Image 1 (cartoon, rainbow, N blue to C red):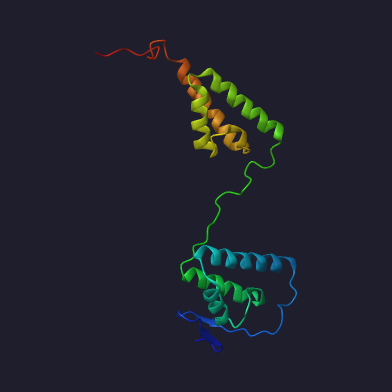
Image 2: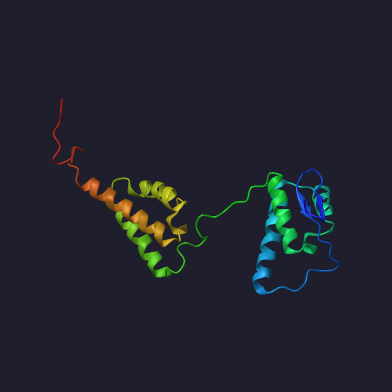
Length: 181
């Protein structure tokens, strides 16, 4: 058992009580970034869980502080663990926010233009392009897609559709197909 441990009200989590007086000590850049991230998680969890002022204050009272800003990094980590125990689920991004970053705007404009040109070559192309853009880019408006990788995927799909449409004869059957009655 931890010597200087207490249980947060409503849990069986033993957390070491770290009593400090005054603001946390000055930190290096990495610790400051970690601290700010933990504070952000706490405030996001508070909002997402719908904690009212009294509930949040009770949690802080368990840590013997009146504000999350008064907590040290180990206490902030413990508070995040506690909020997860209470049911908060942290959302992790699988891909970076700007996955198409690093590409120049001229390239993105050229990719969009090529998509529009390919869409004109296929029957009902504008409608089909909107549907494909919705699926691949996440928006039906091609102008809003700023991710070059997604535009390249869209171009590849449009290219395959164009190839498939051109291999059909006027009656809708494949050139080398045989009809079976």
